[in-house]
Length: 321
Ligand code: NAD
Image (cartoon, rainbow, N blue to C red):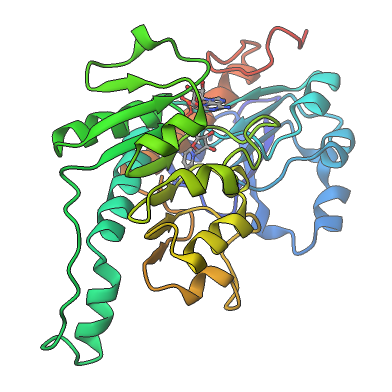
């Protein structure tokens, strides 16, 4: 053990590879050890580093955590971390971009195909002994044009998978130039054009002030009645009430969601009523490969900070002394 060993707060669930890789410099404490937020806050000044998945790391925690040097996000979307508070307190924030893009892209495509071919409805019919008279006819996905809202690591991977399945892709991403797109994707300038010209739209942008509820009633109404919405990014990007009413009025055909605003939905979630809705509990990145890599890379970021270096994937290094 190092003399100046660090104490690192870990998420409740993490692949052991990361924590094991820093065992020579750090003692780790699982969030599981704290039953309440108050207990965690009371202990916040123990931690030199925090590895976090989707648990919020807010200003109150950061202000209390007087020893904190780094918040290492195990994943990509850092909307659960108060970066301004971290920066003001001289705390580095890093993430692990790219390592879960295959996993999430595969999940988005899995949801899309399941919704397009109405897989769960057929499954329920078989289980209920109604397989014999089952006559639901679906459209094929091979002729779909898929609209990608966001074309970063995950969106571009989805485009590549779509191309392999014979689908065309349109892209709306105000920060990506048309010349950066692969030859099987075409840029559009507005969300309206994206929704108007796509058979299905898949969301792959971060949650920001700009993207919050950016997909509203107006966009959803532009999808055709056979249109599908897939969201594996963040729930808050899509107006939930508008989504429910699109299903209610039949102005879209189906929905696939991996993300919910307040964690997995309760039994009274309004989307439960609709047949062609496929819901998964934020498992897009939950593959062995992605979990191992996110664990190892977030731990590597902690080691960098321990060594006095700035992690390559730091999000605020320019502002932290
Ligand atoms: P990324 O940073 O590589 O790509 C995000 C893209 O969104 C960028 O190209 C950016 O220009 C674009 N974008 C930003 N603002 C936009 C806007 N207003 N409209 C359209 N596009 C916009 O990130 P990524 O690795 O592709 O991940 C995307 C998001 O997916 C993450 O921010 C995260 O919230 C979510 N995610 C979910 C899971 C899951 O388990 N379901 C796992 C990983 C990431």
